[in-house]
Length: 104
Image 1 (cartoon, helix red, strand yellow):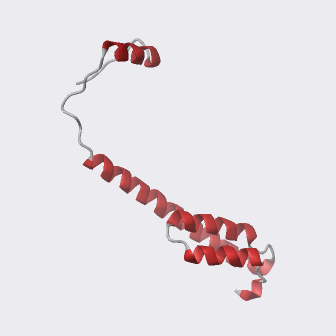
Image 2 (image 1 turned 135 degrees about the vertical axis):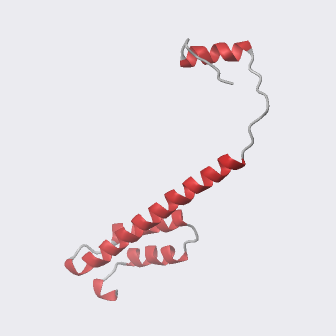
């Protein structure tokens, strides 16, 4: 892709992107590459590819975050009993409203 006359800033961001270990790091450096991408006709396809790559990484990151959350919720154990003091219950009523109900 040397025909697009990339700036040293773009080349540095590309190097950091290639060295990135996590998806969030890769997204960070892709953003920098998009920012520093040349803005002329011959670089349009390169810019489109960078944006597509970024979208795919965002989807992958969102999916992995949801899966991690779901697995954490499944592995979390619900306590057998919960004790609420009357003061805490009154504070919750004040915050949430007088119609506060606890379902057991």
